[in-house]
Each structure stands twice: as structure tokens, then as C-alpha cells.
Length: 470
Image (cartoon, rainbow, N blue to C red; front, side, top):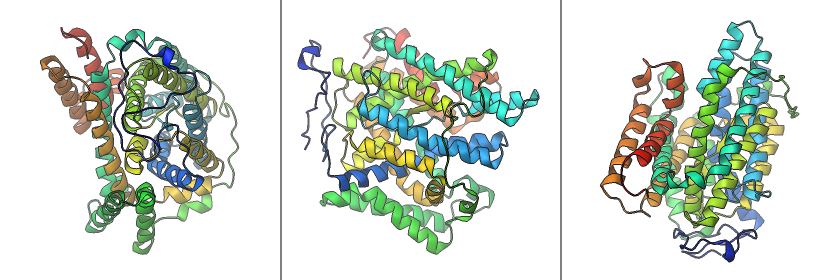
């Protein structure tokens, strides 16, 4: 069992490797720490909760891109399946830490939302030029594959830039990740985008169902019973799912159109490349590197690991390297760039399980879901208000993790200016994305995300403003 204020060293990180200054570990109240091995039953329950928290986030970019490019139904289903399959492989690499690759943390990998704009732009440009949908997909996956190596290279220079990517920058990014995601949580609580089109958004039924699920999770998570605390999210989602069936809002009509098995085929759609289309991809891989540093730092915080010193940098370097390699694997297996997910940090806090061995179970579940699309179809039918009731709490927990990171440094006038400006711009772009509508498409792609805008702002101000970088 893990103890507050302590962390466990992995075999390749000995006391002799520690820097002359003490590493900072954040106190936690975990039931199982990073290197603890929970009993199989408890590990599976925790894994299921991570899967339920991340599942929709993994498949949503594929759903959006498939619709925007008007892909054939079989191609959409296949890409969704591969998104889940690759998430399983990538999550295993992150949790296992194979050589220098991976963070060795309970870090889930999933499809990045940051690339949706450039991917749709590249695909539409290709089809407008006479390419078939398969050829457009070949170009997209080629761009994703080549761009991944930018992140691989960048991962090797993290210590050099550590003077500017400080806890202030990473803490700000983590806060923005949580705060910007709460918009998606509220959208789901109201019924989702579909509910807005059929004018049922914010109905009494949707709000009641989402708050009912939220209340179950809060009550169970506050329980003194360890099992109930660990299973709180899964129980809340299951109860909400069952209630949704009785309310008639669980739609299983798409199950009949799903294939029984999806075979992974490297470069199924061929391989293409276009330098002009590659520019936004290249820059966004740098942006997702900063986001990943924030996510990995947040995971370190919630699992009681240090966020300074040799061990921390080894984890971050391995995690970002894993991000890049996993994105290359994603491009190879016909899905979109992968990145570390922030949702699971909320699950770790709520369940009290930070063991990286749970990641092996998560990886197996995702891989199986990818191979058997009909199982994923059942999970995809979880009503939006049920998901919203759970995710709103998780996203808020991520923002709280960012506050914890920033609380480790002294907030002077310089730090306050950076934090205030970055949060203001990042949240401003999130609340009103039309703010950028008059700018060139490349600028819109780069700064269209509140996380990207706030993260770049924090990074630039931390470089330019006079004073000690913290």
C-alpha cells in the first residue's frame, strides 16, 4: 500500500541518479500506489472505469472526421475500431515503459482532438483535387506518421528546455485541460450535440439523469468502503445506463451494421505526403508535446510521484517519446495521432488506484474492443447525460490537479501575470472560437484550441518576462 509523501523508484532509477536537490513528491491518499499490484478483481474494476471515462474521447475524433469527409460507413467503422486497438497498444507501452519508451505511469493514450482541423482540411483539399476517399485517407495517415517523428526528436531535448517549461507552465496547461474540457462535460449533461438539433438539450430528463449519476459517484466516492470508492464511477455509469434503457434513450440500432471482427492492416489506405499540408501537423505535434508534459505531470501529482528532479525528467522524456512512437503506430494502423489523456487523472483521484499495472488491463480491454466492434457499439450507446454526469467531475478533478502543481511554487507578481494572461486567453478562445475567424487558416489551426493558446502564451511569457522562471 502506498503512503503519503513517498514514491517508489523503478529499477532504472536508483538513488545514485537523483539530483543534488530534493525531488518534490505530492502527498496523496491513494489506496494503491504506482508500483502496488491490486488484486485482479479490483484492478479490473479500476480498468473498466478508466475505459468508460476515455472511450468516447478516443472514438469521437474519428466520428467527427469521418462525418466531415463523408467517408463510407465501412471506413468509419474500421477507423473507429483501429482507434481503440491502437489505444490499447499505446497505453501498454506507456504503462510498461519498454526501455526508454513510456512514462511508467498509469497513463492512458487516446486519439488527440488537436489534429481534427488539419486532418479535415487535408482530406477535403485532397478530394477537391480529385482524390478518392481512400487516397485522401492515405495522405492523412502519411502526414500523421511522418509528423510523429517530430515529437520523437523533441523528446530528447526536454532537459534543455526544462528552464522554460517549468511547473508554472505545465500547471497552467493542466488547469486549462481540465477547465476547457468542462464545456464538453456540460454539453454531455444537457444531452450532447444531437440533443441541440432535436431541441431536447437541457431537458428536465437529461439534467435529472446526469445529476443522478453525479450524485451516485459523489456518494459512493465519499464512502469509507474501499470497494465502493474504487467502483464509484463504474457503478454510476452502469446505473445510469440501465435507467437510460428504461427512459428509452439508449439507441442500439447501429449494432446490426457493425462487423464482427476488425483485422489490423498496416497502411490499408496507402501512404501519401504533402509538404504544405504537413506544416500545421508539424507545429501541432510540438503543441501536443506541451500538453503531454502537462498530462504526465498531472498523473505524477495524483500518484504521488515527484514533479522535479531526475526521476521526473526521465518519466516525462519517456512519456513524450512514447507519445511520438505511439502516434507513428497510429498512422501506420490507420488512425489519428495519439496523445496522453487527462481523463484518467480524475479517475485515479476518485478511485484511489494509481497502480501502473492497472494499465495492462486497460490496454487489453481497448485492444479487444478494437478487434470486436460490436462491443464498442454497446459502450458507444451510453446516453450522453450519463457520461456528462461522470465526466464533469473528472474534468474538474484535472483542473484541481493543475492547481496542485502551481501550489508547489511561490506565486509572485510575474507568475500571477503569466497565469492570468494564459488562463484569460485560453478560456477566451474556448468560450468564443469565432474570435479567430478573421485570421489565416494556419493560425486558426494553431490557436483554435484553448489549451494551445494558453500553453503557448504561458511558454512565451515565461521566456520573455524578466525574473526567475519557476
